[in-house]
Amino acid sequence: MAGDLFSAAVEERLSKKAPLAARLRPRRLDEVVGQRHLLAPGKPLRMLIESDRLASVVLWGPAGTGKTSIARLVAGATSKSFETLSAVNAGVKDVREVVERARERLGQRGQGTILFLDEVHRFNKTQQDALLPHVEEGLLVLVGATTENPYFSLTGPLLSRSTLFRLESLGPDDLVELVDRALRDESRGLGDEPATIDADARMHLATRAEGDARHVLTCLELAHALAIERAKHDGEPEAHIALADAEAAIAMRALHYGDDEHYDITSAFIKSMRGSDPDAAVYWLARMLEAGEDPRFIARRVVIFASEDVGLADAQALPIATAAAHAVEYVGLPEARINLAHAVVHCALAPKSNSAYMALGRAMAAVRDRPAGSVPVHLRDASYPSARNLGHGAGYRYPHDAPSGWVDQDYRPPEVAGEQFYEAGTHGEEGSMVADWRARRGAEPAGEGAGEREGGRRARE
Image (cartoon, rainbow, N blue to C red):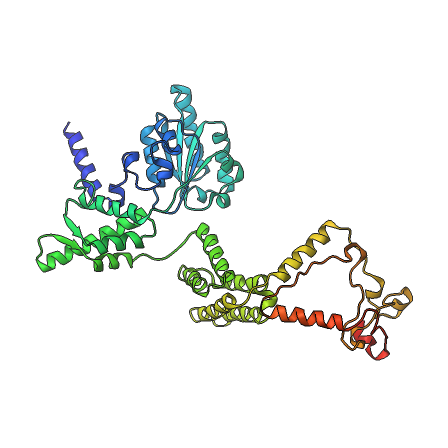
């Protein structure tokens, strides 16, 4: 009995030393903050947990949205045995040991096994393949948790055998509720060291924690410690968390993002330039730079964008983007971020045309789908001595011999004759370029300007 009391005292002491986020981890589904689309009464994940009918699932969402908390609640609600592994430090050997225990448990007691695999995206293909047959046969019910897009990080077979539940970032109201819960809960929160908090400090924590419950509680704990020290210094009887405390706590967080956000932020960056919003484009550029994104990656995306989305509407976009990419290599950070901003703002402000990109796509489709026609005889290389004997170049009309610099002749094989791959854009410089092009073509009647002069032979060949 004494030993039990001692163990309980140690557990209580350790629980008080645990981080606030760990102490406030929900013990019932009703204590989970947010995720109402999954855990409100009658919603799918809640029904599966409460009925103990959970099959293999993957919980996907940003950090601090409740993935591990939900897994722990599954452990408390199921009649199955619950095993936990972290893909950060577990390997195939650990999976085999779990499988052996699961087989023994099933054979001896008829009890199934749930395996909670945290950071499941850290398992490579070989490790995931080792897990797959045991999930497939039903020996293990997998509950995987990941912050990365499972469509990128999990193998198709494993993903197809799991139900995917996406958790959303928590809203400010959810985080305010967590802050208030921590302040009033005397056993698990900060209530054993009473404190009050200003409304603006509370809202600052809630809005700047980026939907992350763990982060808002960690910052609250730090702000609370700062307030306690200030109260002691000032001789105040009770700690009071002010806006300055909340700002100091939040400022200590380093901005970062994972692989999944890498793709999302890159997409937002490109779409902002395409949408001609320089403010948004520079914001996403700053997010990427601040998070440590490789500036060469950013420069490559801008160079691609300059041709794919600006194209002929602004002929200067490509050389400016290319110059920024060169500056990244030549100048380096931090100064090269100015060159990147220069190119990004130019591309955002520029008129847009994807006509060259679309023309190439249509031409590539024609090359793939149609028979490959021979080069017409009049377009073939006639520069070597025997080429004329083969008829190469016969009938070719030299555009420079025509007053307008253009003659009407076919430049395509019969298989794609008459096909239009390039559809002219009307924005920016492209509109005037196309108008001039059409004017030149219309100035020379078909068949004229076809005379061949020896002086232009080398150039035209």
